[in-house]
Length: 199
Image 1: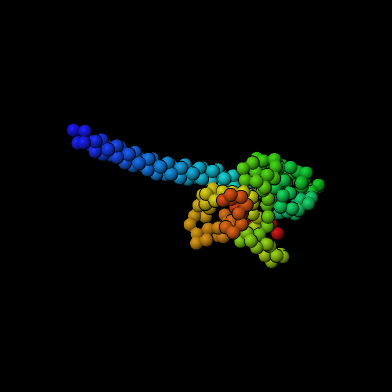
Image 2: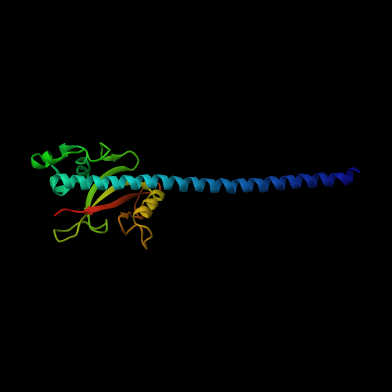
Protein backbone atom coordinates (compact mmCIF):
# COMPACT_ATOMS: atom_id res chain seq x y z
CA UNK A 1 0.00 0.00 0.00
CA UNK A 2 2.85 2.33 0.78
CA UNK A 3 4.14 1.94 -2.75
CA UNK A 4 0.72 2.89 -4.14
CA UNK A 5 0.17 6.09 -2.11
CA UNK A 6 3.75 7.38 -2.22
CA UNK A 7 3.61 8.58 -5.86
CA UNK A 8 0.17 10.11 -5.27
CA UNK A 9 1.60 12.24 -2.46
CA UNK A 10 4.38 13.39 -4.77
CA UNK A 11 1.84 14.30 -7.43
CA UNK A 12 -0.14 16.37 -4.93
CA UNK A 13 3.02 18.18 -3.90
CA UNK A 14 3.91 18.80 -7.52
CA UNK A 15 0.43 20.14 -8.24
CA UNK A 16 0.61 22.44 -5.23
CA UNK A 17 4.01 23.68 -6.36
CA UNK A 18 2.68 24.33 -9.86
CA UNK A 19 -0.35 26.18 -8.48
CA UNK A 20 1.93 28.31 -6.32
CA UNK A 21 4.13 29.19 -9.29
CA UNK A 22 1.11 30.13 -11.41
CA UNK A 23 -0.26 32.25 -8.57
CA UNK A 24 3.09 34.00 -8.12
CA UNK A 25 3.32 34.66 -11.86
CA UNK A 26 -0.19 36.16 -11.86
CA UNK A 27 0.57 38.38 -8.87
CA UNK A 28 3.86 39.47 -10.43
CA UNK A 29 2.07 40.46 -13.63
CA UNK A 30 -0.61 42.30 -11.67
CA UNK A 31 2.07 44.13 -9.67
CA UNK A 32 3.77 45.30 -12.86
CA UNK A 33 0.43 46.44 -14.33
CA UNK A 34 -0.50 48.20 -11.10
CA UNK A 35 2.87 49.96 -11.02
CA UNK A 36 2.44 51.07 -14.63
CA UNK A 37 -1.10 52.32 -13.91
CA UNK A 38 0.06 54.27 -10.85
CA UNK A 39 2.92 55.84 -12.84
CA UNK A 40 0.59 56.73 -15.72
CA UNK A 41 -1.92 58.27 -13.30
CA UNK A 42 0.83 60.28 -11.59
CA UNK A 43 2.02 61.59 -14.97
CA UNK A 44 -1.58 62.53 -15.77
CA UNK A 45 -2.04 64.36 -12.46
CA UNK A 46 1.34 66.16 -12.39
CA UNK A 47 1.11 66.94 -16.10
CA UNK A 48 -2.34 68.47 -15.66
CA UNK A 49 -1.12 70.57 -12.73
CA UNK A 50 1.89 71.78 -14.73
CA UNK A 51 -0.37 72.68 -17.68
CA UNK A 52 -2.43 74.87 -15.36
CA UNK A 53 0.74 76.46 -14.03
CA UNK A 54 2.04 77.23 -17.52
CA UNK A 55 -1.29 78.84 -18.44
CA UNK A 56 -1.09 80.99 -15.29
CA UNK A 57 2.49 82.04 -16.06
CA UNK A 58 1.54 82.92 -19.62
CA UNK A 59 -1.31 85.06 -18.24
CA UNK A 60 1.15 86.63 -15.78
CA UNK A 61 3.42 87.75 -18.62
CA UNK A 62 0.41 89.09 -20.54
CA UNK A 63 -0.65 91.03 -17.43
CA UNK A 64 2.86 92.41 -17.00
CA UNK A 65 2.92 93.57 -20.63
CA UNK A 66 -0.53 95.10 -20.27
CA UNK A 67 0.51 97.13 -17.22
CA UNK A 68 3.98 98.21 -18.32
CA UNK A 69 3.12 98.71 -22.03
CA UNK A 70 6.47 97.25 -23.08
CA UNK A 71 8.23 93.96 -23.73
CA UNK A 72 9.42 92.47 -20.44
CA UNK A 73 13.08 92.41 -21.51
CA UNK A 74 13.02 96.14 -22.28
CA UNK A 75 11.78 96.96 -18.78
CA UNK A 76 14.54 95.20 -16.81
CA UNK A 77 17.43 96.83 -14.95
CA UNK A 78 19.62 93.99 -16.25
CA UNK A 79 17.97 92.05 -19.09
CA UNK A 80 18.58 88.35 -18.41
CA UNK A 81 16.35 85.31 -18.64
CA UNK A 82 16.38 84.85 -14.84
CA UNK A 83 15.62 88.53 -14.18
CA UNK A 84 12.63 88.29 -16.50
CA UNK A 85 11.19 85.75 -14.05
CA UNK A 86 12.22 87.95 -11.11
CA UNK A 87 10.33 90.93 -12.54
CA UNK A 88 7.10 88.97 -12.26
CA UNK A 89 7.33 88.89 -8.46
CA UNK A 90 9.66 91.77 -7.46
CA UNK A 91 9.74 95.34 -8.83
CA UNK A 92 13.45 95.64 -7.91
CA UNK A 93 14.21 93.85 -11.18
CA UNK A 94 12.30 96.56 -13.09
CA UNK A 95 13.97 99.76 -14.30
CA UNK A 96 13.22 102.77 -12.05
CA UNK A 97 10.96 105.45 -13.47
CA UNK A 98 7.88 104.89 -15.57
CA UNK A 99 8.20 101.10 -15.76
CA UNK A 100 8.55 100.56 -12.02
CA UNK A 101 5.70 103.04 -11.43
CA UNK A 102 3.43 100.97 -13.69
CA UNK A 103 4.31 97.67 -11.98
CA UNK A 104 1.35 96.43 -9.92
CA UNK A 105 2.49 92.87 -9.24
CA UNK A 106 3.35 90.38 -8.06
CA UNK A 107 2.15 88.61 -11.17
CA UNK A 108 3.12 85.07 -10.17
CA UNK A 109 2.73 82.82 -7.14
CA UNK A 110 6.40 81.99 -6.58
CA UNK A 111 8.99 84.36 -5.12
CA UNK A 112 12.00 82.65 -6.64
CA UNK A 113 13.52 81.77 -10.01
CA UNK A 114 13.73 78.14 -8.84
CA UNK A 115 10.58 76.06 -9.12
CA UNK A 116 10.10 73.78 -6.08
CA UNK A 117 9.55 70.77 -8.34
CA UNK A 118 11.12 71.49 -11.72
CA UNK A 119 14.27 73.48 -10.96
CA UNK A 120 15.52 76.67 -12.59
CA UNK A 121 12.94 78.82 -14.39
CA UNK A 122 13.74 81.39 -17.05
CA UNK A 123 12.04 83.45 -19.75
CA UNK A 124 13.88 83.50 -23.06
CA UNK A 125 13.39 84.88 -26.54
CA UNK A 126 13.37 82.33 -29.35
CA UNK A 127 11.78 81.78 -32.76
CA UNK A 128 9.01 79.23 -33.42
CA UNK A 129 11.63 76.59 -32.57
CA UNK A 130 13.15 76.89 -29.11
CA UNK A 131 16.59 75.95 -30.49
CA UNK A 132 16.77 79.08 -32.67
CA UNK A 133 17.84 82.35 -31.07
CA UNK A 134 16.17 85.56 -32.26
CA UNK A 135 18.42 87.38 -34.70
CA UNK A 136 17.74 91.08 -35.28
CA UNK A 137 14.49 92.99 -35.46
CA UNK A 138 13.38 91.16 -38.61
CA UNK A 139 12.96 87.87 -36.71
CA UNK A 140 9.56 86.81 -35.44
CA UNK A 141 10.32 86.22 -31.78
CA UNK A 142 8.40 84.59 -28.97
CA UNK A 143 8.81 84.47 -25.24
CA UNK A 144 9.32 80.98 -23.86
CA UNK A 145 9.27 79.96 -20.24
CA UNK A 146 11.73 77.20 -19.49
CA UNK A 147 11.75 74.65 -16.64
CA UNK A 148 14.98 72.74 -16.14
CA UNK A 149 13.95 69.28 -14.86
CA UNK A 150 10.63 67.87 -16.11
CA UNK A 151 10.00 64.08 -16.25
CA UNK A 152 9.22 62.73 -19.70
CA UNK A 153 5.77 61.42 -18.69
CA UNK A 154 4.80 64.86 -17.39
CA UNK A 155 6.13 66.49 -20.56
CA UNK A 156 4.05 64.21 -22.74
CA UNK A 157 0.88 65.00 -20.77
CA UNK A 158 1.56 68.76 -21.00
CA UNK A 159 2.21 68.40 -24.73
CA UNK A 160 -1.07 66.52 -25.13
CA UNK A 161 -2.92 69.31 -23.28
CA UNK A 162 -1.58 72.14 -25.44
CA UNK A 163 -0.61 70.64 -28.79
CA UNK A 164 -2.36 67.30 -29.25
CA UNK A 165 -0.86 64.84 -31.72
CA UNK A 166 2.15 65.97 -33.75
CA UNK A 167 4.65 64.26 -36.02
CA UNK A 168 7.55 65.43 -33.83
CA UNK A 169 5.92 66.50 -30.54
CA UNK A 170 9.17 67.54 -28.88
CA UNK A 171 10.05 69.96 -31.70
CA UNK A 172 6.67 71.44 -32.69
CA UNK A 173 3.92 73.50 -31.12
CA UNK A 174 3.90 75.43 -27.86
CA UNK A 175 5.49 72.65 -25.80
CA UNK A 176 8.99 71.62 -26.88
CA UNK A 177 12.01 69.79 -25.47
CA UNK A 178 15.27 68.23 -26.66
CA UNK A 179 15.31 64.42 -26.44
CA UNK A 180 19.11 64.41 -26.85
CA UNK A 181 19.76 66.43 -23.70
CA UNK A 182 18.66 64.90 -20.42
CA UNK A 183 18.87 67.19 -17.39
CA UNK A 184 18.24 64.35 -14.94
CA UNK A 185 16.98 60.77 -14.78
CA UNK A 186 14.46 60.71 -17.64
CA UNK A 187 14.09 64.49 -17.22
CA UNK A 188 14.35 67.22 -19.85
CA UNK A 189 14.24 71.00 -20.11
CA UNK A 190 10.72 72.08 -21.03
CA UNK A 191 10.20 75.09 -23.32
CA UNK A 192 6.71 76.58 -23.34
CA UNK A 193 5.95 79.21 -25.97
CA UNK A 194 3.85 81.99 -24.50
CA UNK A 195 3.42 85.07 -26.68
CA UNK A 196 5.17 87.06 -29.36
CA UNK A 197 7.56 89.69 -28.15
CA UNK A 198 6.47 93.33 -28.18
CA UNK A 199 8.52 95.37 -30.64
